[in-house]
Length: 537
Image 1 (cartoon, rainbow, N blue to C red):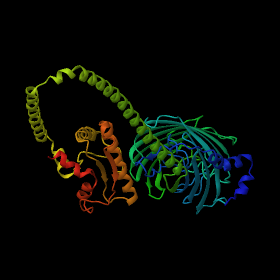
Image 2 (image 1 turned 45 degrees about the horizontal axis):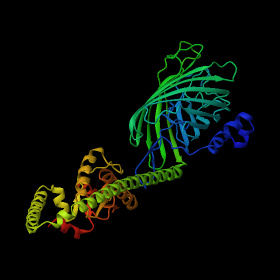
Image 3 (image 1 turned 180 degrees about the horizontal axis):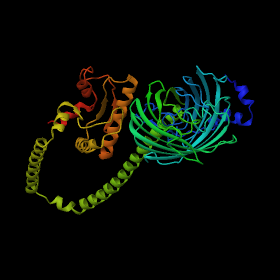
Image 4 (image 1 turned 45 degrees about the vertical axis):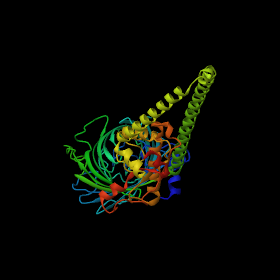
């Protein structure tokens, strides 16, 4: 192996490449990465590991994605490939030689738009007659910048530049730009530039992506033509499994012949494990036609197999969690202040109205004092009769109101408990479904008719997940329902409270799906049940 000291001794370029990752890592700022899923208040962020190339950037095995890694995302990758030489001709290994290549890579999301990567390659062989049958290949590094499109936009665009210094004494395949391992076993200095476009539909869990790459390679090695690199890849995200299909072409710009220069397709599968590790398996299949030139007869062997591991670390997760919690608290405080201001304004208007009514009543009392003094017993009898009629009318109205009560009112007033059976949430989240809001508007208006009741909004969950997660989720859902009903009927502000019970009070057996469904519920409970008597007379 080539030691770090020996690499640094190669000169300023090697030093720059080795130190690139550490330099950019020190400059990272706190900006959220694009690949996160929000679970809810008081819960941790779930980061979905992206798929990666052999060089640690996002994409498929050899096709780059225009999506950024995300600030603080650190990737370490290890990949290896193998193919067997199946024909003898000049400039390539002897027939039946087995050629192995390996790539060690690291990449980091510097901020929301910038990623940096470095790599070191090596090669080995068996049944190879060359004296240089194994060794270090190339040391490379580069930067990728992504345009700051909105996260909801399905199109992404990026540009990438890189430098690759070859340390190999054996190019393996020295004919033109032939061979699968061209960049892994370079003997010279290469500069690369790529334009990258991606179409992103769906999510990192379940969705479809298409990537297109157009690149140019120039070499510091004399007699080496500039190369045109073309690539495209389609990937289907199926939860923990990602299926990909790529096509690649490498041809000299001066004499472009895509059909007879290296052209291959790459089917692959990436498996994303719960341990921040991706496993990639796949192969390259040659589509190139053989040339008429006997010396350069075959640009690629029929196939190459590869496998790799990528490890993902989110170095900014705790900071993002702190920001999320702070934003949630600030939003709650703003809502509280808004409600307080609304209440104060309403109180001032009511006070002004009461003062006006009081002055009018005082004037009316002064004007009618003499008339009231002259009222006789007949007027008093008439008043008593009217009062009796009014009482009878009030009793009839109360009976009529009771007869018109909804089933929900009857259940609440008779038992002190009401199941909100039309309130829905997305799995693991506290946001109220839009289909539930008309129902909550009706319930809020109903509760406003009974201002003497003190009501608790109780949230319950099933036993799926940890106790702490279920407790936080039930509390968040109960608070969301209470806040929404106060917005619908502000007079409920001092009536409603919210409390989460987690999985502690099941109504059914959590061993069955039906039981867990019944246990995931939101209920209203009257806490001062003695007040129910007044509304049940």
